[in-house]
Image 1: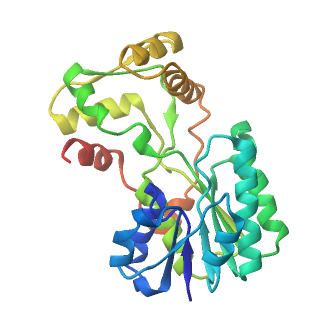
Image 2: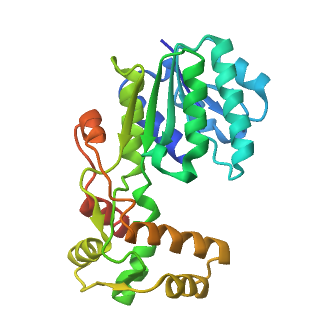
Length: 285
């Protein structure tokens, strides 16, 4: 059995490989990367590294040749029209190379999310090949909210957001990577969809409480409006567009659209990284 991993030098793909190496020898893994000069560590770990570019179908067919299962990590491009073409290139190459199982990193509750149309189109395209599939419908990354900026929150004594009392089902990137590695090395996952979100959604009030506990300082969650949050982020150095996007995401949390949950992730990997573990890792890194 040969496992093919796309996006192998990316954050998610790299973590999947880390988890796979705890389960199988590196010789069973084909790492597909866009730039070979960034993959020296993968070669040193015993993996076969091949060049493959989502924009170049010929490279993909060659990269997938001889593979049994494919982890298809979705394109990071922001142009959805381009992403649809790129994803079609991957799917066609997988079919032509004889891949027997495609695991695709889709998006949680994609049917209900107008921003997930590319993922729904990709899922249908994969189904059309008749190749057995597993759709890993990943939730948002907890690292988007729990990162180095927490240290500034500790110094300020407050987390300031427009999330209100909304709850978020985001999960750690490593947990999602472990779920992918589990599907790739396990049996019985063909033609299934897993919605991989936290089974214990948390609010920013709870985040402030945990941050207080871990840091030993009293931290509050200060609730502000959308416009106040956006202005604060711009003042902190974010671009206008990124500040708007961040405030918009916070607003969706306030509206309750990111608190829906399942226990699929827990069922796959047997645990979930807790909010306290995530905060502790960031503050004590």
